[in-house]
Length: 390
Image 1 (cartoon, rainbow, N blue to C red):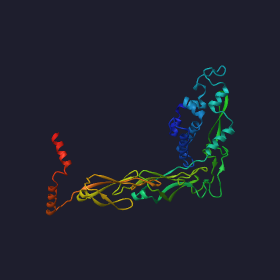
Image 2: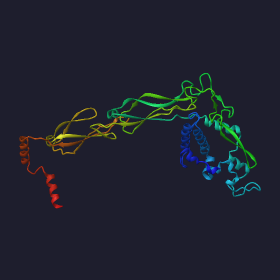
Image 3: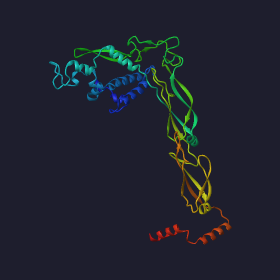
Image 4: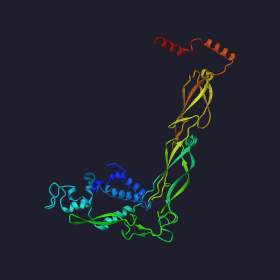
């Protein structure tokens, strides 16, 4: 029964508002996943492969998709008969409410009535079309400095590639895959059935070759007839300067092999950057907390501050308060692949109070405090005035 069939959109894992390209991409991924060559002797995978092909055959055809969206499976099921739509006048053609014109139009529209040769060629070309290889994802951890300045790192991953022993044919050396006699290499066969007193034709996946169009009588022992093998790959990857945590870098053509002459996929490197003990990063800007002494804060002076290029001199003005932030222009991280565009380095100073003073040092500070009087305690005095008013 048509109503027991699984929803085609659900089969492909897409929404009803999916675009043509989204439907095609979903089909391509699922077809590769469940293809009989990749799942030998797996009945469940074979069943899913047929479901995916059936769903795509409907949703990739604008007319069939429109009927399916309007009437569900009854709109494209040859077994639904006239009762699935109404508007039939069995006494002579269609009633005016049917809106289909004549018998030939509705049968052609509903059951895709066509010659076996053109239908087979169309289905066969789809099944033998080039399939782009899948991308492979790799996670790479680098140091803070490697991310800032760029580096080359070796990545290691598993990829699917064409079997070298059979050159991807799946057939053992000295032999070759034969064209399926039942479908003539198209991967589909014609199925005829009687509908409303007429013989209608439709295409179904060939059960002999399971849609591949080829029969391998002597499979390659290396790939077991799949034409593909899994291999551990190692290669050098160039990490550009300025990458940040979470950035993805693509190595083109280094992923899984395609099928039927399709291009290979990419390797997607997901970057993970280890933290730095001094610097914190926000985009292309750097932040660093610098400790200074009470004397340096009070009278100012020249101190050393860290930068990406090494330590350099920086002048602290007198009277610098703790938590004051200074900035060094163009001392941050370069924008990825653009060395001329750099962020800034922000220095936040923290005034450290001297510990473990001896008695002489304490007396000097007492004399210093007494000599200052109240002229340098404006913030302190203002604080207590506010406190008294509250």
